[in-house]
Length: 494
Image (cartoon, rainbow, N blue to C red; front, side, top):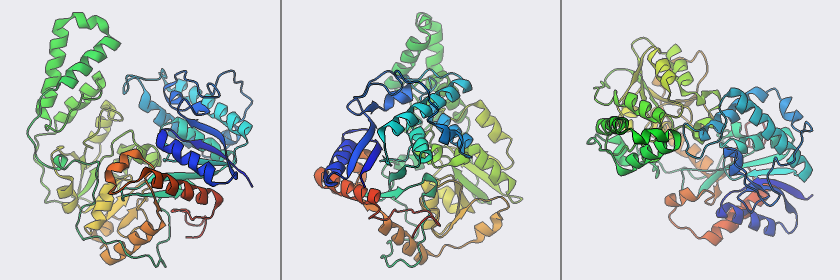
């Protein structure tokens, strides 16, 4: 049978994977529909920003009339949840967070655009005759999530790849919600060597973030982005020197209150960002006693795949903290630490108000070490964060809410209503078993670098060898000759 492939492949490296995949298939794989850059059938990023940029087949929505091609999606019992997920992801390119933004202003705009995007995409997929869908990263940008949802609704066999924090290894899965689901028992794979208490190597984290630091100073980038914001949004204020001086003083005060590794406005300035960092600065000089009993909650950066794609309803991280508080034993606290990369996205005034209303919650300074917090906590709680992986490596249990890759490993407890947190805190982590089952997981991974940013986490890299390896593995996954990393318990062989 010929595999007719729907694929989301942006960037030269992904296009190289795709080209080699077709070559290796000896005519058994055809690209039915390619979403990617301008040389793809349809330009994908323009669907996120609602720009008019043509691919080889023009613009996906041009001269398109609705024929109800998305009715399978609309009829899904999970439709409302799927639409909410996609709308949440579309919001990442709103004008409050991006200079190059779409023009969706309210809930109805988002709903209308979701329906237009889903129906147009469904019709294009049907017309293409696609039988399989391939994603080189877990969909989390809005348009790719709609593509995934439509592909699943139309019955296409779907393969999703996901780079891991382990050098040159990636996961595979058919259903995003199955990430982390595998049976580690019975594996003869060698155990993963983990020194108890050792910290995982996270190349994207900075050691400075876990230490007390001197206070910062306003940067030229911050000034430039403030002036850019005023020029784009309210240019008349450029002629009001009093306003400009007052705002620059507020910006300077924020830099002076935060650690010097924080550069709040280096990438983007908005008045919402200003309000967010002014509020965050209020927590910087407080003293926190770690001798009592507490749950440690390190917040995820948003918007990111870890919450917007893998978190389900818990992408609303305050919802997670509210759930923790409902089960909080007397005398315990919930210590919440902000992500060092976070800006104002999902951190508006009502976020802070909700937090302030939750029993037992304390927001801690950004200079307090996440390692010290997890060392002293009764347990760590997170949606899908690597803080839980770090916790179980040091023998500390963790509670997870989303679809984390490590969710079946020893020491991990999946949240459910009615949990007894004292029992979770009393749990021990069998380190030898952890090494064994982590080794079983590593053995199920595939070799290769599919995300360019992870080259920094790779010791040796040959582009040609990597392209061949990824293409061969992908072909085997599509044909069913290579086992998925996470088949989903009850969906297939472990």
